[in-house]
Length: 186
Image (tube, rainbow, N blue to C red; front, side):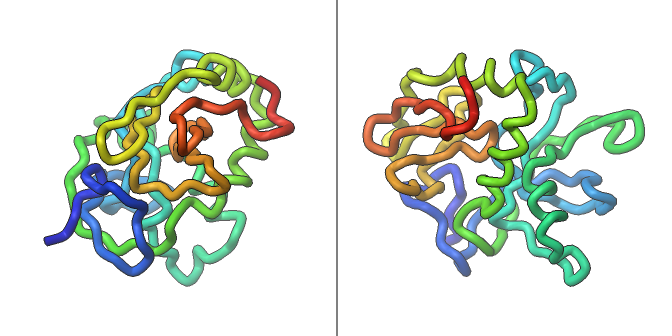
């Protein structure tokens, strides 16, 4: 039986198959079922992003030969699947669970995204609001307090689990949201 991501008690493993939430939508010129993390939401507060959107899950996105360019993928990893007047104007559907192969254990572009975040002052508000808050534990692992994303399927790095949605850093032992990485003022 293929395990669902939201029911895992351990990080994903490369090469294994999982049931992953996917959303059929246009994103970067392609319409297909895209793997997503977390709920559909807007980030009007602090981040000032009003549109409803999903965040893609790069762990399950395969590059096509012409898409192997590093810069393309690092920006794709940070860009939400959203609606606007031109694309997905009818809205975004609810996710459908589909069997997908894990291609990488985490978002390899997370550090690049942190660097991009430094350019946007709205993120300082976001980090200040959540730093020091306590994540809940659902019996399998920590759940990010911002959008209730289960984090058991994300491996800690140096004792820290970084939520892939909005980059909150959570202490893997205590569940406390840590300050942002050095260089990103809170």
